[in-house]
Image 1 (cartoon, rainbow, N blue to C red):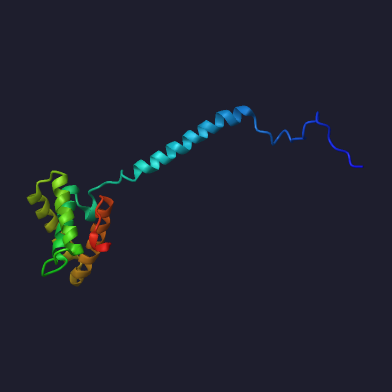
Image 2: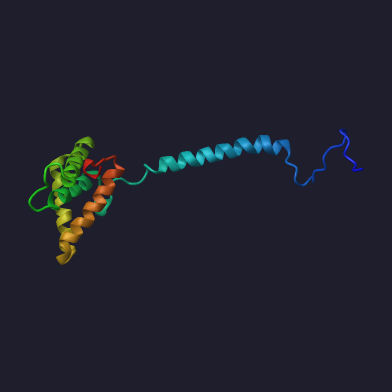
Amino acid sequence: MPTTASKKSKPRVNPEEQLSPLLVWGGGPALLLLVAGLFWGVWKSQFAAPSGHLFNTPNQDVEAGYCLTVAQSIVSSGAPPGSYFEEAAQFWVKRLRDIDADMGPAIAEGRSKLSVDKQGSGQKASVWLQYAMDLCSQKAVTYGARFRSFD
C-alpha cells in the first residue's frame, strides 16, 4: 500500500529557489516603475527628434519652404486639383502658417536650397525631386499629415 504524506508535513522546497517576501513586495513595484518609466521615455522620445533638419535646412521655416517648393515643382505643368502633390503643397503652406513663419523669406530660402541641391544632382534633377518628395511626405506624415489621395 502506498504511503501518503500527512497533512502536517510541508512540501519540500529547495531553499535556494524560494523567493523572499521582501524581494516580491519590494522588487515587484520597483520593476513595475522601471517598465513604466521606460515606456514613458520611449513614448516621449518619438516627438523629440529635431524637427527642422531635412536636407540640412537650418530650421522648420526653411524646411517647410523647401518641401513646399518640391511639391510645387515636381509636376512641371502644376499639380492637378485633388492630387497628392496638391495636398502636399497645401499641407506645407498650412505648416508655414501654423509655425507663424514669415512665408516669403522661408519659401525663398527653401527654393534657393532646392536649386543648389538640384544642381548638385546634375542630370538627375527629376530623380532628386522624386527623392525629395518622398522624404518631405514622410516628414509631413510625422507632423500629422493625412493624404486623402492614398485612401
